[in-house]
Picture (spheres, rainbow, N blue to C red):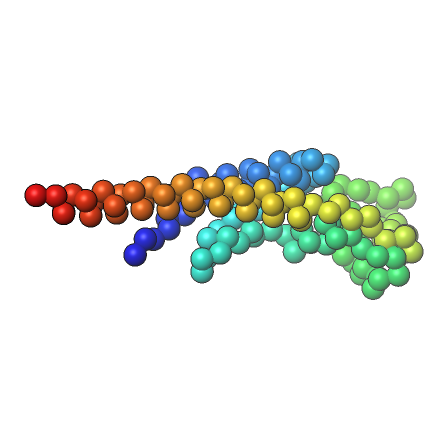
Length: 146
């Protein structure tokens, strides 16, 4: 039986490729780009990222459920956005209403990320599998020779 050994180098290469795709979509330096990690679990490559990774890619339709004002206030403070006069509630309410009325445009980066990382993983696994098969064949030939 041939066992696939997924290396940390491969997982890092997947992260770098994903970061490059996100940079193309003007997300370079964002929390989405910085705070992600690939792991290999149960024969699957899993991207650990913020839960809004998908939402940024798919956008938000107008008239969708309103974002809670407290979530907007937390986001504003985290980003260092301070409203004029210091009234976070009014500013956050205005942002919530704007998002509710106009939505948020989709970035559509999920498919390019999937394509790039699938290609990299397939190439790396194919290389490793070819090496393992060659090793198995060489060992079998060694035992059959007089």
